[in-house]
Image (cartoon, rainbow, N blue to C red):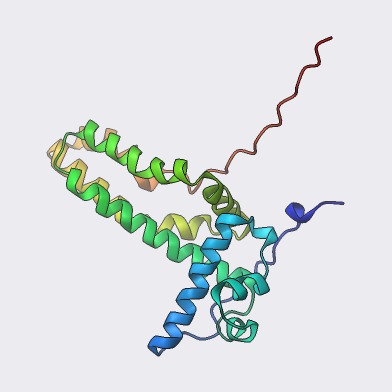
Length: 195
């Protein structure tokens, strides 16, 4: 029998039960979404519970269930909001480099995308795992609209609209990037016993 990592989460496909209307209720929902991201940094999806999420957000379990029917719906909303925020931040960071040379832009793009992943490896390992378990690859990939627009603008400016050049570079377009990599599992090192 498998451990907690082997359990498949329920995929509810549910939406939020109700959307917050007042400022105070928006702040409550925001705190629950932020708590989900913070807990995801510390724990894999399979270890999270609604009780943990409510406790970290500083709300009662009943308040959590007023807005979200289950844990997976809360995590889904939190992950999609985080993807939107992350891709928007990448767009803003890369915007000043649009007029730079194409190679400089690509170098900055790699640095902007990889730096947070390298800084917070465990968080991204848990995040990518949660995205895979909750089947959110396509929805997260759809949030790349900011990067797609920026990439088209860079190509338009740098390649001057030459059709053959645009066709070659469009193969590298974020539109054709795979949805999300599956994070490699760490390999256990075998120690050789020397006599």
